[in-house]
Structure formats: structure tokens, C-alpha cells
Amino acid sequence: MTERFTEILRNQNLPTWSAAVNHRFVEELVTGTVDDRVMINYLIQDHRFLDSFLILVGAAMASADTTEARLRFGRFAGMVSSEENTYFLRSFTALGVSEQLRNEQPDTAPTAGFKAIMREAAATRSYAAILTVLNVAEWLYYDWATQAARPLPENFVYAEWVTLHDNPDFNAFVAFIREELDRVGPTESSLCEDLFRRAVGLEKAFFDAAYA
Image 1: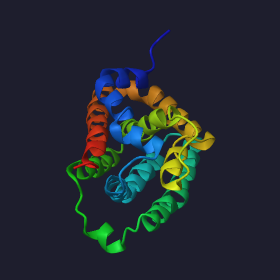
Image 2: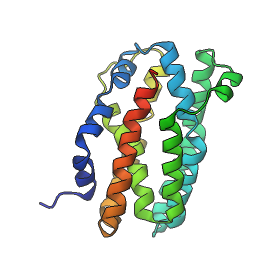
Image 3: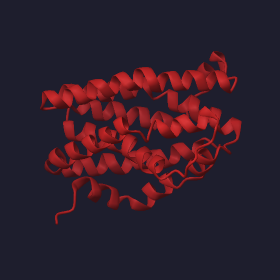
Image 4: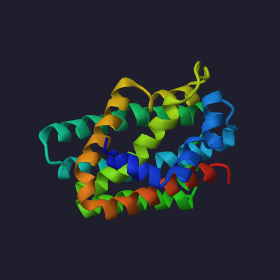
């Protein structure tokens, strides 16, 4: 049986991928033991992705070659703009994070790097390139969230961040973007390999930076 293109990309970067999926931050998140300062750092920085991420999803919608794919990306953008964004705002309130702090904390290097690679992929207008960065951003989170031990912590700040990345709709979306990249990626394999490698490295660095 031929190995899937997405599996090839992940296997080429398996040590870094595994280091991110099994990161200390993930282990503490699913047990509800993340220090508040670390969680605040993480959430402020992750929320900074919203604008660049919506540009990336919009580029996927524009470059997709089927109406069904455009509809899938449109529904996903709606979820990110509503449920996921609301989670951030509720979490900031629960953790006592002021709007001033959110605005004044500078981007970490991984945050700046991830915002840049999302916009870089979007600017290529290549469906394969866009899907590559989307797959790292969403499939990697699916990977750790689906492995999280249950029951989850009672505190919604931890529990909902897991369930946002492990629920039937999200899981189906990850399956869809993997299938799409399997379909269109091999014709632009060098571009996809480069973007995948850099994006996985940024994911691991992003978790590290929460503890800086």
C-alpha cells in the first residue's frame, strides 16, 4: 500500500513532531497543572494568530478547486471566528488578563514566525502550500488532543482547549485537509516539504516559548 503524502511529510519530521505532541505544555494542559503565568503567555500569543490564520483559511477557500472544499473552509472559518475566539475571550477573563496586557506583550519569535509562514503560504496562491501549513497547525493539535487522557480537568480553560481540537466536526476537518493535501501535494512536493518542516519547528518552539 502506498504511503500517504501527509504521512511522508510527518515521518520526515517525526522527532520534532513528536516533541511537540508530547511537549511538557501538552502534558500539563491535559492534567490542568499549567502554571497560570505560562497559560496566560500561551493564550495571549496563540490569540495573536487569529488574523493571519483567517487570511490562510481565506486563501484556502480562494485557491480550492471544488465548491465542496470552499464550503468546508467557510464553515471552519466561522467556527474559528466564533467558538474558538469566544473561548479565548472567556479564558482571558477567567485568568484576569487585561486588554492592556494582551496588547502590550510583544510577539515571541515563534509567534512572529508562525504569523509570517501563514501569510507566506497564503501569498503563494498554491493550494498545496496553503494546505501544508494548515495541516501542521490543525493535524498536530488533533494528534495531541485525541491522545489526551480522560476525564479532562474541570476548569474550562484547560478542558475546552482540548475539546476544541477533539470533537467530531474538528476531527472530520482534519481528515478532509489531509485528504486534500494527499491529493494535490505530490505535484509540489519540494515546496510542501519545506513549509511542513519549518511549520513543525515553529509549533515546538511556540510551546517552548510559553515557559520563557
